[in-house]
Image (cartoon, rainbow, N blue to C red):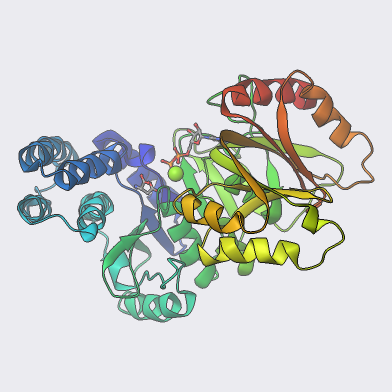
Length: 424
Ligand code: ADP
Ligand code: ASP
Ligand code: MG
């Protein structure tokens, strides 16, 4: 059972979560994965930002005001103030010279504090994620290492029904504190649930499941009762914030169903993600921001083999993954969401052809049964977008996705018109 930031966002919410865990776990063994309290990760990152620019006093002030909040939460929970050491550590980090490690050390306190408090309040043991969660040199979870260490860590608690652990945080291949990127607690839960071959991975959040469109931008969205692993993975990767982009993978690998549930309305059915695949239906729409498109145009591409592989080798060299691709006989367009090495990539691509870069785009993904023999499904999508400039369309890569690239400014309008055309 994984609980997100809002689900543990106040003392009252923590009490509710404790009750929920007890009710749900009757007779079953449960591993509880917690995020930091809502807002805390952002505050910790702000502290690191102050330290980065050398403003120690602003950083320390933020640590002090955060501590006041946490003292109040502990009081309301009726537990001792168990976070003293965490805050004094944070203050001493504030006094040390800033390194690239500082931010990772600081941001890890969010999950350590929420779990320490709930473990104290519920009087159940806590298993330290830093003892077992590992990423490799490529910042990917090191599954073999995690499996081994997790077994070791859990062996001490064979008799316990409920255990609490931290989401998000881990150690890297050098053994230093690191994390699974923003929203990574979902990933922790899926890695743990997958490796232990749990009956189910439950992601408890502030909404009643995966909705058929982004509820932050579109009215009258509704929860999708069931999705296949592939559909859920596409939605998460292409922007449905309710799930961390890669968190479906470990669950799928071990065939463990994932259930998205609402802490504020525990009896709502939510969304079940498993191997079943509903035919003949478009399930949901999602959008991902911060997309750029690189286009390479070259007459040398005409009837030539090996051209694409030379282009892809450049992206590979700079560890930049390509999301969408469209080609014509003399040009190829590729979307990316990581501009860290774009300068180097563009200059190397220039040896292959004329290169252009478009930024500030969004990918809209329509996900469901989009096999080509479902006549009219693509037409419906294209028709809905007739008043919106479309930069790129990717269809046919899989049977369950059509992705459209639009200007970021047109994203909300695109989500809304698609919603009307497909679901209303
Ligand atoms: P948590 O803190 O529990 O991890 P998140 O904020 O990461 O929760 O994810 C839940 C939020 O995701 C919802 O409140 C909602 O605003 C947003 N969201 C975006 N797209 C969707 C979608 N398709 N279905 C449900 N929620 C979505
Ligand atoms: N606390 C982390 C974040 O805010 C991880 C998570 O909540 O999933 O990104
Ligand atoms: Mg989240």
